[in-house]
Image 1 (cartoon, rainbow, N blue to C red):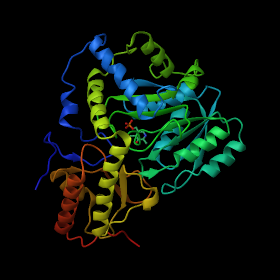
Image 2: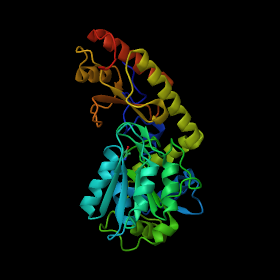
Image 3: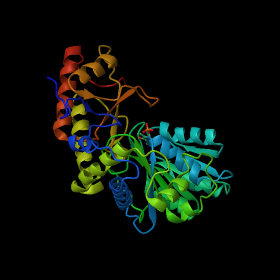
Image 4: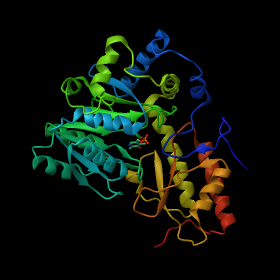
Length: 377
Ligand SMILES: *Cc1c(COP(=O)(O)O)cnc(C)c1O
């Protein structure tokens, strides 16, 4: 039996791009010139509502940017870390390491404070590192490290960083819209996110939410014209227009996606649906013998990493392909060091789809002659 989404495509149980609603796709059916006042109005209200998500109305601004999440993360690091600054990066997965790579390419000094891929960032290690290195100007953290799906202690990280008087830059790409992030409880200079993860819109636009004061101090930092967030901000404030061709249709979809997000009760409502998806998925997979990489206490409701089953009859490629044919696309590759695979629980889907995916997993194991999803050991 094949279960398909309303667009006739398989459900995406991945870290993004994700299944979006018919209305989000429908919203993109317009040709607006970049100077069309209709587009400029929509662009303005999208920016305002994104700032509202983190309660930053009086203190923060939203700077949208063409591209995927990585473009905005790269723009954020290049725009806020001065050329003679130094970035301390909290690393427990691929996206933290990617920020180190960005620093290398951009010619910014960086230092890493690492934990294992199944261990959250350590605020005490951060405290010691900052106490011992006055040269660190900024700290970067990944709120949900999508490599494993682990939740990092962003409030504690923000407290330590603020106590040392350094600026915090957050990769919130997989967290924004589902995990609480409020400027009252998490002091940050800037955070980066994109349209196509927990906001459930189509890909093509990212955004940075920055503290006004930090943005004012960022003049002269950027080494790239197109990734200069301060320049992007100043130009957009002047006449409401983007500096370069705007991703018009991606903004139209995001406008509609924000409407759905607000109707669902914002971050609290969406987070609750994802937590329910997570619960159903993990319970069901455990019943089939699978084990999660992470303990429940540090598992974010975004994507779950499962250990590879030990049964030699289990072949991941065939498992993936059979699931896809039944209407469920999971993530085909692993990023963790441990032998594993990932199933996402975000996007425009709910408990019904998670149960459908579990039924498909069960019958595929049966076809393969795999008695249990239990890993070795
Ligand atoms: C998805 C993601 C990104 C950006 O990835 P893109 O492929 O460029 O969209 C960055 N950080 C995290 C934590 C992510 O989950």
